[in-house]
Image 1 (cartoon, rainbow, N blue to C red):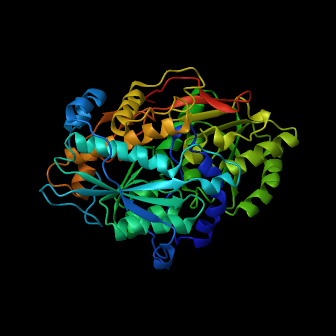
Image 2: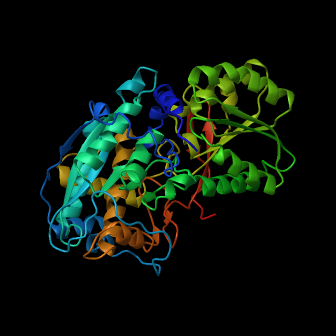
Amino acid sequence: MEPDRRRWSAYQTLTGVVVGMLVAGLVVPMLVDNPSDSSGVQAGAASRRAGAGTDTGSASGDITGAAATTVVGSDLASGSTGGIGGAAGTTATGGAGAVTATDSSPIKLGFSLFDVAGASKVGFAIGVSPDQEKQAWQAFVDYVNGTGGLNGRKIVPSYSTYDLTSADSEQASCLALTQDDHVFAVMGGYNFPAANVCVVDANRTLLFNVLPFTIDEAYRSGRHVSIFMKASRLMATFARRLDEQGLLKGKRIGILDDLGGDPTESVLGALRAEVKARGGNIVHESVLSADLGAGSSRVPVEVSQMHTAKVDLVLLLSTPIFGTQFAHEAESQQWRPVYAGSDFNVWYTDVGTQNMPSSFDGSYSFSTARVGDYKAGLPESPQALRCKAIFEQMTHTKAPAYGQDFSGFIGTACDAVLTFASAARGAGPTLDQASFIAATQRLGSLDLAAWGGGSFGPGKLDLNDRTRILRWFAACKCWKPTTPFEDR
């Protein structure tokens, strides 16, 4: 499919809501487009470099390897990977920034820092700044370097800040990290499809993604590793959990999607197939334009059509901008269906649903993220506490309080860097894309600070497996977990 440049431009408006979805310290999610199609990605590359700055980080704070080991445990500190067998499956070769030397030369990693200033203009406040993000990433880079590095080789970080509301800024950030700095891998990812394509396909660089929009096409390059489930597996889990709650059989079901997050409708297709396989009766599908204005103008019509079709359950795949408008319009028509979402398009964050009407009360989300624990009175996980302890030791500052956005981001950075380090150490003395991808598949089961956890395995480069049910409460306009994480 030829990339639609106009569709990407539409994200400049749509991203405002997605930005807000960083709540609970989870990183901004967005989709990645088909990496096999990169035509047009490099056009005007030079002119788009402006606005995306890079800088090389330096180690901050002193800590001995022994002291740090007592915080996180000997598994990560020693480089043990908790292997689960052979490294069969997808591998990658070549690419910018490939590291093949077996000496002590440093390894450069790129870190994308999102600037949320543009998001505040559309009413989505989030308490994480680029400086805080950099502090968190740097703390765990320093920790890895202080506990032996990557088989004796130091990580040299390169940081690039991008504007979440600008596709051009994200493209420039990709080019700065991959073409100017020649990083071995980009950590974090981007919320515009062209920027992720820019990393894994156009510039043949590894991407260690912490965003939930990892549609299946993103894995075709063999250079994409993700914490979140890829879309097809997520949709299978979504349908299964809905069925377990008695929300499918005997129900009249509508699906709300948009071409911004699902440009080829592959996610919609996967959900449709899974719902029908479990006896669900889909009576209406609404696929809105990626353009905010065009999509919004269509919402009242789609509400009327679903209402007329007597839909009982609305499954949410669209951006919460459209979902919020849909729920308000439905309430104005005296129609109150049940709503349900998942990690896809971040239907698990408080900021994404902060403007929902009271009729959204009781809605479901099926998520792999540690969201709402603080508001539900649950203690911080042992993994999160260990990550905050490392952060405090490395920065010599007090970690933010439990429940704050930055506290959650520390967990995200910790999970990403330490998991990357485990795979890189497991790759042995010769680190390149192929050995890294092979080692990632040997990592096995992992418990995480910001997510419920899961496993990598042969041919499986998307980590998360464990999901739990969240319900939305109108009294606090927030999601709270109502079940523990489960491996099913």
